[in-house]
Image 1: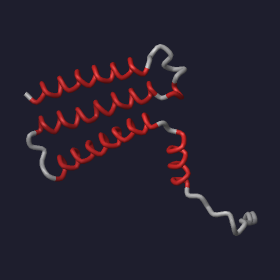
Image 2: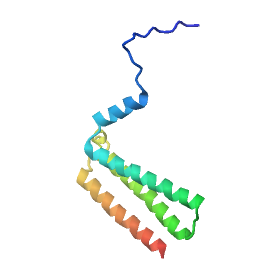
Image 3: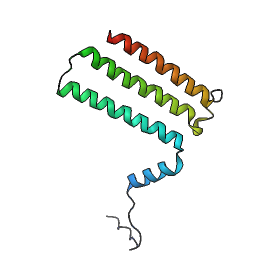
Image 4: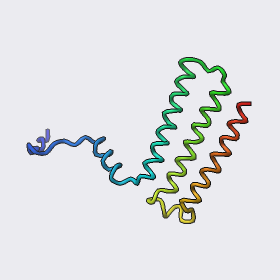
Length: 121
């Protein structure tokens, strides 16, 4: 059996989640953090809608499908916006400016919610 590496008494083990959180806070712009918080809200909203449908009732089913598909669709559009405005992805989206990415996001959101509203009947 291999001998254990000796740790100095002053070296504390660093929790990986703490390291990840610190790197996220230090290396992510406020614009991307705002988009990430909206993505988290959409994910939480979808989980709550699905849990309500499973645990309580799915009546009216059209409303559940419209709400859940709206949440999933908005999540996809927002994730696309995040990838387009991220400065690390500038080489992949050379011809797309942040303003154009936001305009695409806004137009896609309007079209998505138009279909969701029409699905409700």
